[in-house]
Length: 222
Image 1 (cartoon, rainbow, N blue to C red):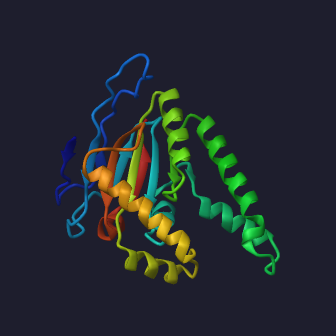
Image 2: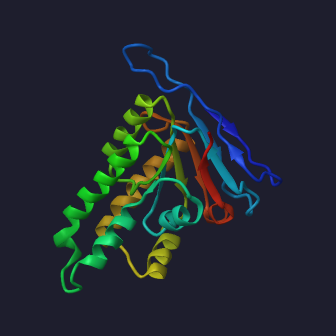
């Protein structure tokens, strides 16, 4: 596993392009995973993260960790956030109609929007709830197809911070759902720190709340 350090003077961090992961039958050895840990730097972390023009970036973390807030503030290019899709549907639905009744339609609309964004061939930032592993598999295949790289950006906050974030935005998930997310997030974080990234993912960046707060731009070069 390769580790790099972002110094206090860094204003932008460009991730070097790596060869797309080849199909298993053509090559048994995949590129070594790269982990960039930007946590515990007291806010002295990059103001920008730059990726290749055909790359895909998945932002993950606990519900309430600030994924949607980070995307809204930093991403000026294509971004796909399930929360945006839900908000759009909420505005169109009667207030008395429970979300559970039209949740399947929201998910279909979200994945349809993701499919359209991926077909454009541009770099895309995608919100990931952390429990849908098949979505990461889909993104990994798409990254290989377009000869780009799949990157994972994980916002690492503890459960109390995440619950506080849910209260702040006035919307949360059930206790059962939160425990599922926490379990999946814990496994993912442990794997990343041990140098084992999800299949098809070539690099991972770890942020805490301070590092996420300093970040001002997530963009694609070229």
